[in-house]
Image 1: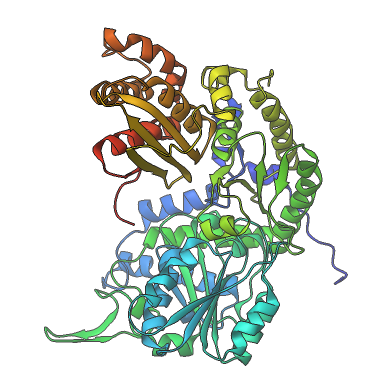
Image 2: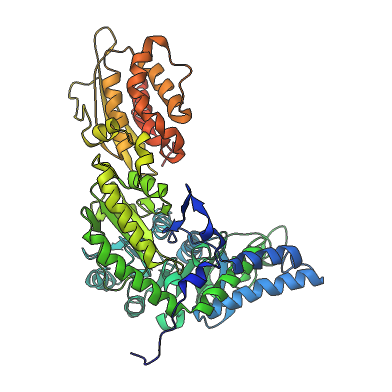
Length: 419
Length: 158
């Protein structure tokens, strides 16, 4: 214990910041348990974006007039805020993308094609979101001689660290690309240890932080991550903006991903030279308003405190893990020791889509299906998919209890009894 | 808590969803197709055996999916038996119309009895995300009749 009193999170005051939480679904209060797919937005984010468009909007890095300079300053201030949020060594290590998917595609293209060598292998895992799988399949199939292998997941839903060590020992791994927190199981992977093992084997490491960055404090220098990616819309920010953190020494050596304006140093009809990072990787007009929104979102969660958010969600998950498995027919996928506010479950009384339709009727939003992680569902033998509940900083214990009550009722309903 | 959903999940739907009829492989089928809804993972294989006069002598299926998709496939295999291919196609078109709009203005008098058996599924029209669950079986039947072999709710090459 560090001896500090953990700052408490006042969930009821926080809920007042989110206008949508006051709305109703089918006449019932909204119980939003799908923040893992995309989180709701606080007024602070909405207003920052509105203000940007009403008072300080112009294209960035172009005009020599006051308004453009103001917009440029706001865009670059967002980069600085994200750098602080991840504890990056410098803002220039932050590249804005459209989302996590684009950030990983950028790495697969620029680092994968540019710096990996024929015969080298990308090592990912069985528990990845498709965003951290399909780009590597495409790289493997690009005819460059780059391989792709997978670290197994244990029955508990954790990365098989022995298997990771075996794969690294083969000596051909150029990049380990794994999630920092599973979007299905909630499992948090031991990122610092993975990075250490990868580096000892001469490999680079990328963490998909789409879920982790929302649920706990991330320090890319402490993790010694080479690449760390996340998306704005899961962090209570807008859609249309994602983040790639990469060590400067890598960005300096990586060729561009997309070509166009803003990423060049000079252009003739015959050829162009590239701008320095991060501009080299931000072709075209960037997501300016979205960057301002992401800045507000980062400020918002930072003011509440990532440690307080983690503690709040951990308490909710612990509560859910006591209440839900007690319901007949409910089975939670995985039982990882270190986990965040996401869990998937199967339910013997109903297919996930039927259950989702029922829960929606009483205001509960859960995700049904395979959550962009088909291989993981195949691994656990749940081909019909699962239902997934995911928490945000605005989720309450009462909402977890209401989900449990609804599941009990749904079981009666599908048995043909009064539900 | 969920009583207002009884229109969608009528007893006959729950019954056919839990215990689908004709849920078997048809070894001597002369037509077959696979149906996929990649968005939700629903998947079925459908077999059709035609009689010498061209009518559907038997239809059977296997697969996995939600109560709506299983019940729809089950009711379909019962309904198309003894129908000509054209009648089966007409039923499929009329059913899709009903699933999307909740009404069936084009219901032909000659097939009114068959459509009545399918009306318990009309409730899906209020649930846009579930219409495809109900129509997957009929898309798959069309693919079998066309000799296409495969039907997907999303189309496109993988």
